[in-house]
Length: 145
Image (cartoon, rainbow, N blue to C red; front, side, top):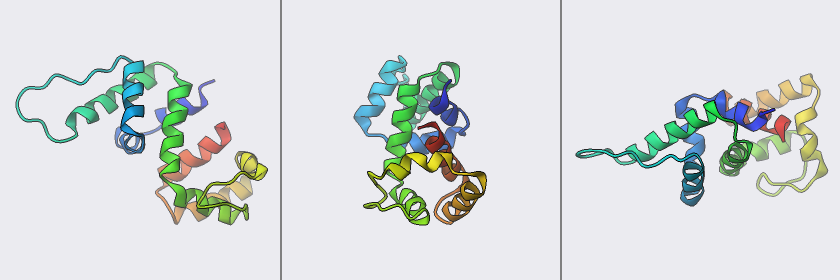
């Protein structure tokens, strides 16, 4: 089942673009190449970032059509690494030791299996840190990982 791809499929184009923007340029090129997405041909003056925006939209369309768990997981991981404050808030709330949002604790792998009342409490805490779509994507990632 496509757990990570399903998370990306639930995003709007703007949300996906925000997530993709957190990926390094070289990684994005690999994603585009893997799905045979080339830079669009344009005429005249093009706004800065327009070609990459079109390629990002094409990548989302490719992920809508075809499951690619490896690419989806990499996009999500790269985005989460850029959202360390969100990760730190979750770990602080659950009293899991961490260093700037990162932890080696075994407890981290159990976050996705929290009982519904604890998940709801965690979600409320995280909503103070980030928009609902980011919190939901993070919590879904934890369940999928």
